[in-house]
Image (cartoon, rainbow, N blue to C red; front, side, top):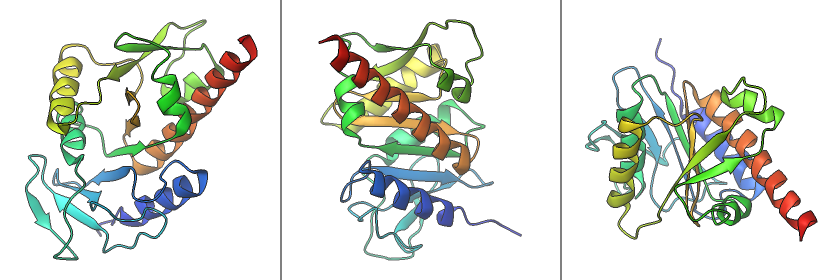
Length: 205
């Protein structure tokens, strides 16, 4: 029996919307199927009101395979999900949200990596080290999304990140995982870390 991951994506989107991380139509979520294709939120759909009709199924090259609503198009950032799935063949879900904290902390560095505090929460992202030195990759928010995707693919194929997450400057965080449930938890973990970083910055001012 095939499991339809869209219900998990709808539940996650509703939660993230309520948190203020997917305001209006912002953000996009996807989940990969056993044949390598993936369901992704359709472009311009309100994330707090999704139904199973608000998704488009595409293959890893971006070709549309299925549209419950013939008028809908895949998210404009589908190409970023493609890049993640191509870099990490075992990944089954990719979530991108727009939080205020993610946008603010993306400017805490001028380089291409954001140093994360050595919090316990890093264990939830697979970092089991004492006083770890972990950087989250940061990418330029190019107007042409394809440029972002190419830079992600080039960097990750050459040097995979230590954590399953990246920041696009002033644009939000993207995580990937081996299941929609794990991607959901990764979003919550990184957003906690971002809130902590903001709190530390405010205290030190």
